[in-house]
Image (cartoon, rainbow, N blue to C red):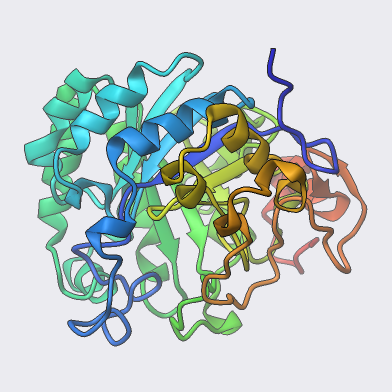
Length: 374
């Protein structure tokens, strides 16, 4: 029996992100700004991208190490031709309890039914604003709001439920629209998660003064639609959950900048070219594509996947398993297994005590107009 994968802090692997492409049809300013990812940008050639069969094999290996949730991502995963075939293949992997996909929603009107038929459980759609001008500004003028709303409606009609929405909040860009977005999502029964604007290491012009903290987002919504804290669905869930006091649904806050949640992280990412990394902000990954294509067995690939394997005899016959370094990010978030310099001691769900004081304080006190408790 395979021993579950633990890092040196004894944190288990639970969630696997599978990036199926580095391409996207949007040019969101916080993710793939057009001035960087323009016509001259060199995306991965097809020969360097894992096939669906290779992805499925690696997923099967990683799932037997403990992952129970698999999320298909990109880039934009729906630009990958016949993506529903990969969904069908992953659905057959024993041990996958939750198979989901994150998308910008643009191609969902054409794809939602096929994805559901292939075995996808649910979907998450990026939607930063309902305001047409704001939305177009944020996605590089690549899509109207209505096109994405049509995609969300198609996903709901196909039975991809519950539907989650992700909204990146950037001060001076879309923060003035968050209450309207929250109200609309609440009325529709969708779970809306607000994400602090963060530096993802791709020269997006990130500045701290453009970050709207999770606390401020919660306060703004609470002033109009009263909230109260809710328990996490599971220990390593990244979103701090809040439900509406009248029972009308919930929101989530992903506070990667003001309160990193690295201490309870349970995630691993498989990149399109076959590297495994343990953080969105990781400065290096470990290559699995090279050994896989060189004829490595499943047991050998499993050994390479485990922490520290690149220095072991398990990788001696596969020179390409040496860690490779993507573009170095500029973020204080750390890779799985690294310590958090300067952080308060971690006490509960891996979160600093000061953050828990904010999270668990009664709502009447929690959303006061005073200084942040964190």
